[in-house]
Image 1 (cartoon, rainbow, N blue to C red):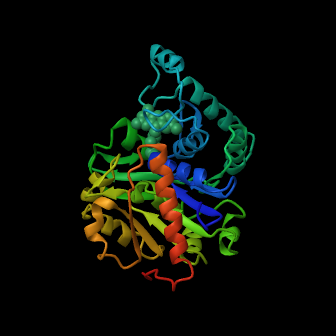
Image 2 (image 1 turned 120 degrees about the vertical axis):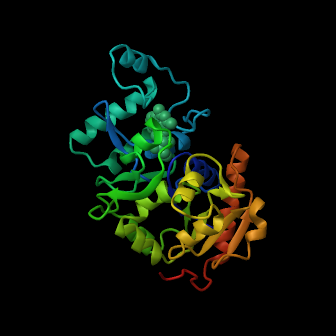
Amino acid sequence: MSAVSRVLALSGGVGGAKLSLGLQRVLPPGALTVVANTGDDFEHLGLAISPDVDTTLYTLASLVNPQTGWGRDQESWNFMAEIERLGGETWFRLGDRDLALHVERTRRLRDGEPLDAIVRDFGWRLGVESRLLPMSNDQVRTVLETDAGVLAFQDYFVRRGCAPSVTAIRFEGAQRARAPAGILEALASGDFSAVVICPSNPFLSIDPILAIADWRDALRSAPVPVVAVSPIIAGGAVKGPTAKLMRELGLEVSSTTVAQHYRDLIDGFVIDVADVELSNRFDVPVHVAPTLMMSLRDKETLANEVLKFSHSISGAARTKVSS
Ligand code: FO1
């Protein structure tokens, strides 16, 4: 266990959820709060789907499908098979167990309950000991400008398998969106001892959170260290379209690019052991650790490394580079 006590983690889908699970396992019960991206949310088959919130929820509840990293374990697909038989849309796969979550969330949203209250209750019912929050109760939608036209996130990501080339990304609704009540005050008043930006896609998973002025301002002025973990290892991404997207946006596929992207927010940056030779190429303190999370032990080890590092830089002069 580390000296760091309460931690706020910012997360997207699978990669972020893995580190969140590591943090949950090495911190005391209840000491972790995870803020999940909702830019990927959409309405599908008449249901309100929140993929990154659900991936995090299932991972923290040890109910996630270990093969995909999203959706439920012990899943069956009768609903999808029947949808197909009826000629419905099957490109986005909703398993039978997972379906219950979407049906229940949709009902509660339609009854006027805010998303954060619904997610909090789901967490409690599924036995999650950490607090999980959507980045906002207001609608924010990630939209991509591509060589195949303007695409909604899941159309780009799942239906088209990230094949289109991306020229720009926007977060519709982010300008009006607010963070859920209470969390920013908790951060500003020192309730947390560190903020961790998980190794999620910076452009698709973390940027939707940072596009909300509330969050960006709160992180810039956080009275505690903000530490990001690079999703890039040895010039490639562990999973997903991060490296392809960076090339399309004209960026070098390197952890130095990611640190530069977060430069006005972070006080420290964690890179993989494979990138040790880059460690003197950053404007912020750098910690080198194994960042590939295959086993539960890997997740716990990285969580401990991140917490140790953030503790070691807390109290040091702020290193954020103003932009
Ligand atoms: N990802 C896929 O690649 N194909 C799917 O059919 C799919 C269904 C799905 C259903 C529920 C859910 O919570 C997540 C799901 N995902 C699927 C993952 C998800 O679309 C992405 O991983 C995230 O949006 C990006 O973080």
